[in-house]
Image (cartoon, rainbow over all chains, first blue to last red; front, top):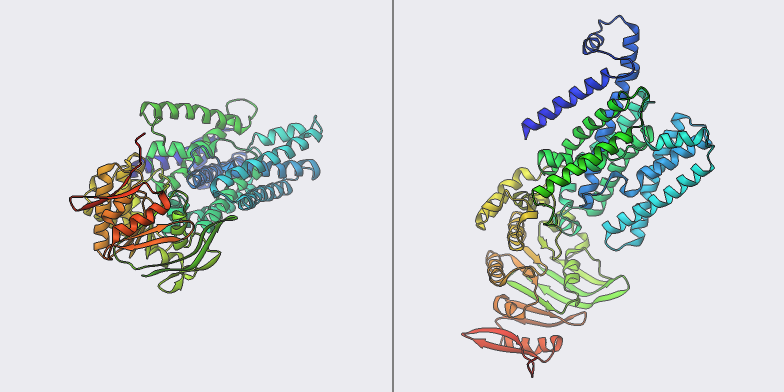
Length: 332
Length: 262
């Protein structure tokens, strides 16, 4: 287990370096070594590394970890392996905010990000409020409320798209909905990084309580867990993680859904370990996807094309191995 | 710790489930609660735990209202094993038993540090150390029940409350499990459980409560005179006149006897 973990760290560092090297203007490992040591006198190379490549790689690394952790937390909280970070409608909410900014505020990056983040949080807050109002078995009502709010947000998105100028705005909206890190800069990276760090710390402190919650509300309650505050804390943390990413990069699909499964498959199931492993594994996967997105074709392609493709392939492999192990039939 | 319900009425939504229930439970012996499906047995247990708030009346633990106890204080005194249990993904039997240490640990700290040691000891005592490394999802119904008991031992509570613990067990395991609960009570823990089979109640309970329409219909102690006869009378009221008490080799059992065979 330890060994696998350190291998993963090494892969993470390797992917990070590779992601810094690859792009329209290629840098070699030697270049990067020289830049880091301050020996590089090629101003162009220095600029590309510090201003473009490093900031982007940093943002991608944070985003991958954030999405994967959000997915992991939601999956364990809902005891449902099919849940993704969008279960309570956060991505749709973020999209509404970003598209509104694009159409009515001229697409200023700061306004777009702020509005997107706020809208994402607002939709989740509404989901939670709706679930509380519906009562019943809380977890099911939460999922239902998420579906309802997600549908409403999508209705708003479609309306906005319908009213958008098809030659300019519509393309920008579609592009945003497929996600991309091509506009990444340091201010994005720092904002997303700090938000993610805050949410991570919250979830990290709550991780033992979240682990107890996998028993379900009844038993966790009997073991002294304050079920409602812990659930709300978990939702808040996972939502901020997702909204921080989606508001700067657009919709990045599948990472939150598949990474927790990958981690459980590679390392075995153990809550507190999977918690950290998801962060690194998600980070690695998104860095690979982003590196591919800007290198396989001359023009950069949206990231969700690749994450969806990787996700679909992984899911097939995962289901086939599960069937071989005979785990499909016993209902877990 | 003494559990007391005073004039407790509980509503689930608009529906009254319990009406003016009065009950005192002392932490000694095995107390079993009988009642028809939907009579409110589970509701009664969840009310004692403070999971449901009574609309009227009070639940007192050692004379103090249950809502005044903190989650930690309460969970160090009452262990609860619910009936519909979610089978946790990603958790071995040993980790599951270790969770009993959680009430003694601050929320941000790892309860496993002590919990795993105590959990392993508890599994050992119950003779199921070999299950420790297995995933909870892979255990049989009976094995899960034993691991749950191990967890309550780690939890070290004076009270053990179980909701229909024998529901998924086979014939012999029912008996083994109830004998185990008797042992727990001999160690000085109060054991309170719901059960559907009145014969098992007659055989293993020190005290039997019968829940009728929204309130306690009968309260029988083993030592008192006419224990099984009065119970038979009471059970006829809720299950029907077909209930019959029989005795074989000094053991009593309740049968269902209809006038004609079908």
